[in-house]
Length: 634
View 1 (tube, rainbow, N blue to C red):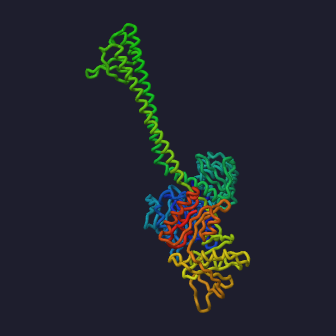
View 2 (tube, rainbow, N blue to C red; view 1 turned 30 degrees about the horizontal axis):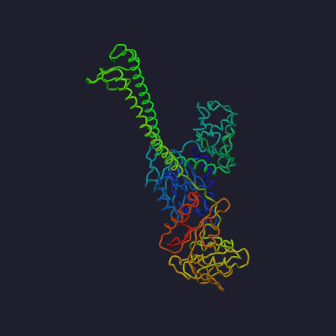
View 3 (cartoon, helix red, strand yellow; view 1 turned 120 degrees about the vertical axis):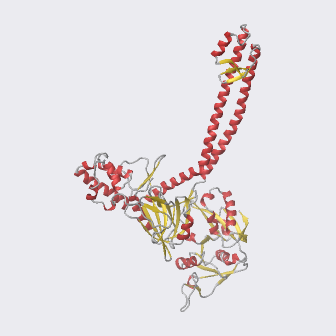
């Protein structure tokens, strides 16, 4: 599928509206032409934006990395934490301009969707900083250090099409070609417009009637308006040779078209399938070549067996013929009657360098012509048996080839299977923070840093909550989201435990620390007059309710909620109680990455499906900051 300019008009407006106020929190390379942006907002759900030379769309899929992308490092360097402030398109040109701002700097990411496609990173003045493909053609040059120059405009601006400008396109060419070339519309839209108009596509455009012209103009402008502005009636077609997404319903009513909720969803389906198929082809290519070679070898071995069997049979027939001639009184292989019979069977006596042979088809068997016919026949029977013996050797080789072929096919399937994706689940608000459910089933939410500490107090603190903080510098705030005034001692102890464990106490192995809790009205969000507070800090007034935390232990676990699996980290008891598998950790000497890898390896034994759901980054994200060790698995 090729993205049309009028489709891009809709996408640019739709994506810009949905991503307003978002910034780039992560970027992944998918393949050499595609990158996935994770866009974050302080109050709204994350958005995954795929940027590729084939298209741009919001996705709910996280494709595994297929091959390196040379732009990734530079984009991460310049665009991470940068705000996406603007998405533009000039007319209906198949080029999108994404503007990111980072403090006082501006960067423009330009994506070209025509030809082989391109992704170009520029500064605010459109000077090229990095790009996928350098270009040096007659009308423009693209390379690092040069100013970005778009290609010459192609066709009319269909968004502002008038009857006069449309009529100027008319010539002796068929009306189908005139619409396609002059307006820059893809074949599928041209065919739909012609179908609705009832005009023969080959009819010269300068010969259509005034009535046909008016009807055609109305259909064109209406189609363009529906695609660019809506209303949409989107669908997708995915067949062996056709992968396409349609924003509007076409009049031919393709029975293979499957309805989708939005044009963006259709693009996500089609383009994701395209990326995955190319990835599978790339991963399985070495195996495919080896399979082809082994299949060729297997065919040759089968043919060799047939040839050897045929040789053995023919030689045996000649030997039997000689025995028959002996019974009829013939004794010399050189007798004329025998020579004639041998020729009828494609056999003859020949001499090479003075050595006599019986030549049977292409086979040569050394004989003594002066020997008796039974002796020569016996010699031929021996050769026939020898040929039959070769069949067993070839069959052994065939068996080895078949085993190699089976293993190679299996490896190819495994390679294809390694190209996959996971559905990006819409997360609950609290999943961007530290969180867990207590043994009483109450939600506890904690900050990760000063920004999230501030966010949970300012945005999510409610009247019945309990606010926790540890008696150590570098402690998160935790909220126990109680629904009423009832105090549940076990929940209070568990949240106090989590508050200490996720504090700096873990990094310095400070055992025996305390945490305290207060009511919401004791938390003052502003500093006293004439004073200031660091970001994420708040004044606490009144009595503090202290809870001693004797141990530093947390547990990482996975549990199922509805149809989704979630990963959580919190005090061991509620995690063990709720989760399908768990790992208990304490302060230790292993890095967060090594601990994450160890836990992942064990969890994957519980359910192979976890590999596709949770990346190593997901494990690292839930761990407390600092070194740890795994002390228990379950």
